Amino acid sequence: MKKVLITGAAGFLGSHLCDKFIHEGFYVIGMDNFITGDKKNISHLANNPNFEFIEHDVTEFIKIEGDLHYILHFASPASPIDYLKIPIQTLKVGSLGTHNLLGLAKAKNARLLIASTSEVYGDPLVHPQTEDYYGNVNTIGPRGVYDEAKRFQESITMAYHRFHGLETRIVRIFNTYGPRMRLNDGRVIPAFMGQALRGEDLTVFGDGKQTRSFCYVDDQVDGIYKLMFSDYAYPVNIGNPNEITIGDFAEEIIKLTNTNQKVIYKELPVDDPLQRQPDITLAKELLGWQPKVEREEGMLKTFNYFKSLSEEDLYKSEH
Ligand code: NAD
Ligand code: UDP
Image (cartoon, rainbow, N blue to C red):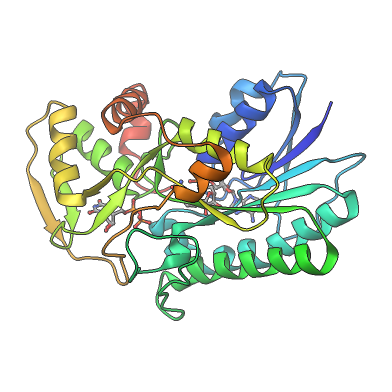
């Protein structure tokens, strides 16, 4: 049985990747320090003979006994309010954490896939974003801790690939959503859905004209899986190109949740990208991948998940 290490396993994407790799017949080692994750996301795997969990901070030396064939490095705060709250840890997990995982991959002769992000494009001047766009990032702005950690992560990964011949993969993930997102993580989907469930007004930041393109988690996981088993070492965008303004999205959520909340406007966070849409031509050609889940279907599944959570989760404001 091939062995896979997944960091960030107790998080939103990491936990879905654990499920996917177990389902595909791998033995999965999940690793997490729970800084933004939740034990509940992997509790269903506790008695699975093909899963083990190691509580560990990946910025510290990582020791794995025996063979290891694949590594997916997904540990990192991912929501703007998380990485603003823990900026140093965010920089460390993208830099020191990635360095540790590259070293581990080299020692084990394993293939490493790193979770990069559309944030490497910053507030993009090219639209939609293609992989050959270098980006427009404010290194010293509050979001810089995340964006630059991820840019460094890509650079050091390519250096290990070129210098040591390590097998590496880089996925640039665009806004992804679905069950197991933290209701209070501040990202727009949990924020709007939590507000709808609590009967609060929906908080649109800025004038609501900024755009995002939302990808359902099952599509994202499928794209990442295909990339891992491709032979392409350069970055690949994985996301859903269906773009919408945040203002229109708030209206969509009000309709979907069948509520009659008002929309209220709040200040736009510093360096909040004005537009974001993946160009997925490369993923289509290279991986034969494209998203299948329409926003309406994905949002409904996600809303049903949030509805099933406890009152305690719904009113928890701090992680
Ligand atoms: P998440 O916060 O739900 O999961 C991240 C997990 O990493 C958490 O369980 C957290 O406890 C863990 N973690 C953080 N620092 C750690 C450390 N030092 N050691 C061990 N574990 C640590 O976030 P997510 O949405 O699942 O994102 C996962 C990855 O995907 C991140 O690398 C993120 O940058 C990337 N990504 C996500 C999106 C998205 O839309 N969800 C978009 C772009 C990139
Ligand atoms: N946003 C919003 N209201 C909220 C949370 C977010 O209008 O309560 C906006 C945010 O300013 C951004 C977009 O929604 O323009 C997506 O934000 P998110 O935090 O989900 O992720 P980002 O794509 O900015 O990393």
